[in-house]
Image (tube, rainbow, N blue to C red; front, side, top):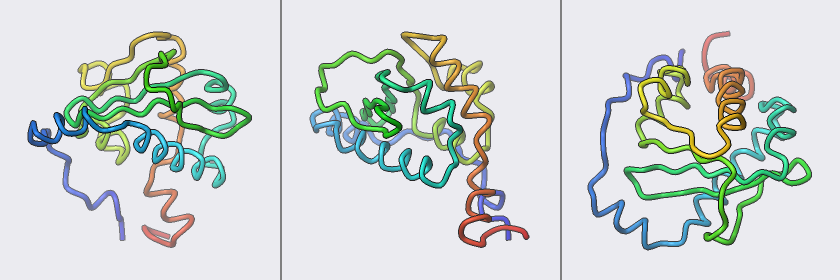
Amino acid sequence: MKFFASLPPIPEFHPPMFIKRLNQRLPQWPHAASLCLALNAAVSFKLLPEEVLQLCSGRRILVAVNDTGTRALFTCLNGIFQPVWRETASADVRFHGDMHAYMKLFFRQEDPDTLFFNRLLTIEGDTELGLAIKNLLDSIESPQQVFRRFFGFGEA
């Protein structure tokens, strides 16, 4: 069974505007904490290359989901991803995009180069760092391979 390959293509969609307005009024640290939890799980399962930890060490990275009004500002210290609790802190590099673009990236329905070339995802700030992170995204195993290896989903 191909778990992710059997998913239909992710369409371009936008949540209702009230979601964005609501999220912009809420604290953003829960998003950063959730993303850091996922990144740290990926580190513990050895899914992220060591270069990611070295590259992100001491740098502040912002992932913004434009159409939901959410942001996740985080850093990596001593090999552990951590939220940046001060929402006024500046980021070294900022990634912006809509939810459907991030989902296409995660589920490998589009490669990062295509998403950035078509301006569905953008990088601001330290573009050298941003491009290095983007290139590392390409080298990470697809979720289908990870699920197959750890949970027995997918083809043998």
